[in-house]
Amino acid sequence: MKMMKSNRILCVDDDADDLLFLSQAINDVSPETEIVQALNGIEALNYLNEIKRDNSPLPCLIVLDLNMPLLNGMDTFDRIKADPELLEVPVVVFTSSRNPRDKAHFLKFNVQLFTKPDNVIQFSDIVSNLLSYCRSQAG
Amino acid sequence: MQLLSFENAPCFYFSADDAGLLIAVNNTTCEELGYKNDELKDKPLSTILSLPSKIFFQTHLLPILKLHNFAGEIFITLQRKDHQAVPVLINAQREIRNDGSITMYAGIAVHNRKKFEDELVNARKQAEEMLRENTALAQTTNALQANLEELDLTLSIAKKQNDELKQFSHVVTHELQEPLRKLSLYTSMLESEGKQSRKFDLESVIKKLTRVSQKFKSIVHGLQQYTWLSESSLKIKKLDLHKILSVVEAQLREQFPNVSFSIEAENLPEIEADQHQMIILLQQLLSNAIHFRKENEPAIITITCAIIQQNKFRHIADKYKYEDFVRVEIVDKGQGFEPEYGEHVFELFKKLHVQSGEGIGLSLCKKIVENHHGQIFAESKPMLGTTFVLFLPLKRHPLATVST
Image 1 (spheres, one colour):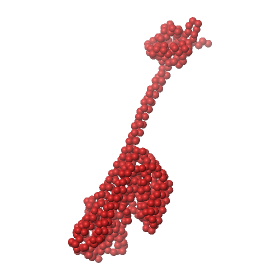
Image 2: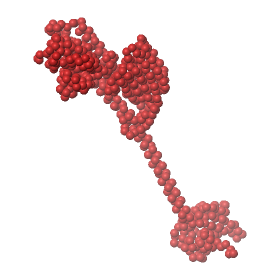
Image 3: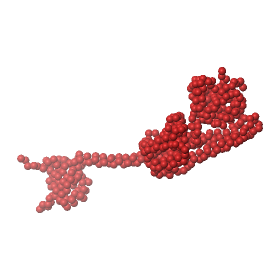
Image 4: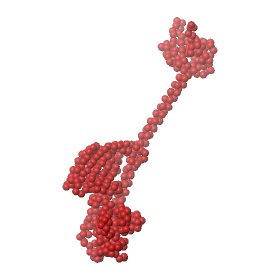
């Protein structure tokens, strides 16, 4: 496991239970990580744009769900990609979708897709895996 | 001045007695028939008649002459010495004299007229033939048209059923998957109780389990409503849309008791449709508009209608039959949604907003509209409102008695 600095992770998911689970699991592994929650793509993009405006450091990782109202995961990712600053932030997809086409789509952009497990033990393992994509930022 | 001579007059002129013997024959007649001047004198009249005319003479002409002493515009065929036929139109006059009666015959050759008559008869035969063929063609065309209409209708129904089946499958394989996963997750939590470092709050897990089973219930209920719309047959009758709207408005006042909303409608026509389904349709669309109004603003909804002609053929290319449709536009100035979801908004359980209900309302609307062989479209921009456009046929097509 890589050494991680205290960093900020943006979790985007419309399901409050999954968000809670994810946050708790991340903090189990890495207690110093700050977690920002967004309930859908629009909220996530609003937050990211605010950070850019304030010149605050961007999150070290974005964990993105796919099925969300207002703006779904794929469309959110497209908009992130279109922004040269946001492009720098690593993204992983954490979704209940088991569709291999979704996985293939994101692999094209070098983005890993993790399937939400139905078992509490697997959850912790997956979260550790997720966190390895977190990029430590200078300052 | 020379006395007018009938010898060389430009006509046939001859006379015969009652015995049928020729008395006098003018020069023209002899020449036309190929005889020398005196060859025909005292010969029987039948000599210069063709066989059919001989018979005609005996059976028709003679009796008329005996009765009326006159016969006019009689068509006979004379016979030349060389047996060639000469068509002639004659008048005959019988004179009764002291020493017997003579009949005078005067006539003109009508070669051209015969030809003309033959052509007329032919033309008429052809015209009748063409009319027969045309009638048969018209009947075939009508039958074909009716078949095409039925085919297009069948294609509509098949496509609709296919779409619905796809949506249904999607719901069963995807929508239900998520609650199932949660169920599994929470029960695994209960199982791991004590085995993991972190303790799970039992009460909250149980609450979540209850919520998940509620979610299952609502998905199944939604599917039931969706299925019900296919199974029931339509009870079509003439509906006054203004009356339907009043009923729906009253329902909405009950559903949203503390919400400020207004519905303006003009030009709502009479339409042949199923009353129950029309009420559900309007209720869903308007309740959506009220539900997704902008915060702190009343919901203002306008409904306008126009009668238009639309091609009733949906699937067969290059076929056109225009029927009366009503174009209904339902406009609200609410939250709207991203325009790219315009088509997806009608999918079963599709949720575009955070505070969405079960997400089946609009798919029910689409089903109802399609049950009536109409179409529905949605246009929207976030924060600028939503417009629903519906096309509904004014009259129920007689072929379309199959409910889908």
